[in-house]
Length: 77
Image (cartoon, rainbow, N blue to C red; front, side):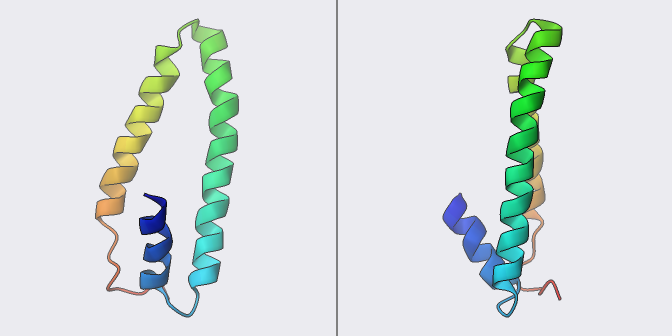
């Protein structure tokens, strides 16, 4: 998936591909940080490891659907 995501940044805006890649990378790292904290908190509160895994699966499905709506032929700026 990652090569496709980086290539998409170039397709969306060739002149600002670095900025777009940086924004994508930053958002991903913030999400990864929050996921780690929230995963532990949800397990501690619910006592169930499946609940956070279901939530992550749901987020992956939503992101796949949103990814399908990206139009690389239409520049960001």
